[in-house]
Amino acid sequence: MNILVLVKEVPDMSRVKFDRERGVVDRSSAEAEMNPFDENALQAALDLKEKTSLDISVTVMTMGPKRAAYTLQDAYARGADRCLLLTDRQFGGSDTCATARTLAAAINKEGGFDLILCGEKSVDGDTAQVGAEVAEFLDLPHAYYAERILNLDKEKIQVLIEDIGGSKQIRTMTLPALIGVTKNISKLKLPTVKRKLESLEKGVQHITIQDLSGHLKEEQAGFKGSPTKVSKIVIPKQEKRSSQIIRNDLAAFLQAVNQELVEKGIV
Ligand code: FAD
Image (cartoon, rainbow, N blue to C red; front, top):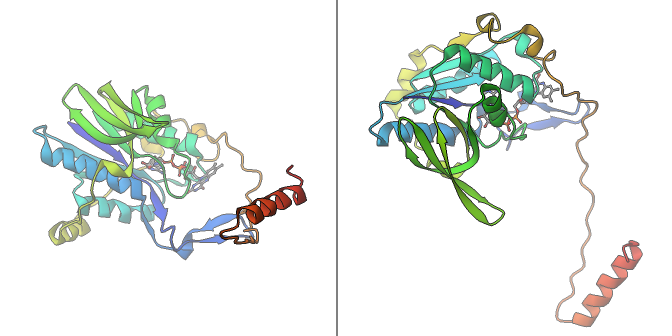
């Protein structure tokens, strides 16, 4: 069985700075790493490889600049069998639609994946759109917010979906299928020193727009293929907040709330 994990390289969001003038993330201000949700997706695939009797091969795919090869090396170190890097100047400026279309084209070109895993969202773009869009472009059944894989065999997968609106769902899908996973799907394991050293020797397979000819038209990639037009990006300024603490005096508390609501013109 061939499992594909989609991973995105993101800046370390605890360190990254925002360029307020240009309204963009200053990617040079922090190191890049694997999107945390994708780490869990990869670990879930590796757990299936280790714990089931299915003969599983795990491929990792990312679309990004050349330096994203380091993130793929990290994926090798964690246990991936094969890594694919979609990189080309013409992929630059892709919105979620063009990103998903390009990933789907590469998946079509490579062929033969039974199960595709992705994170529920990225920690930088945070749209949670790409996985579902990839599945739609490939016309595959898909489920999002999967927190447990209950069953997997050669024909189908059964997943438990996170509690949304008070109820958990069990979804069964015929393979090939795509699932977007939450962080509960797996517990991360550290790569062994042996795998880390081996990963330094491993090459990453590059895929360019030329390699995708027949699967993706030039006008479907990058800026040209992106229907989203960003007119302006504004980083909200934090408003100053004030507070008043009233203890053990219900009447005074109610009077203060009433006064505040009247002053603000709410009542
Ligand atoms: P989500 O939808 O939140 O991610 C869900 C999951 O999909 C991830 O967990 C991962 O498994 C998978 N996934 C997402 N992205 C990738 C990927 N690249 N490779 C493999 N798997 C992936 N970004 C740039 O870096 N450079 C640009 O020039 C650029 N230009 C843009 C222009 C426009 C008009 C817009 C709207 C966006 C642009 N972006 C650019 C942002 C880019 O569109 C998003 O980073 C990208 O589409 C992924 O969306 P997301 O981060 O919301 O992912």
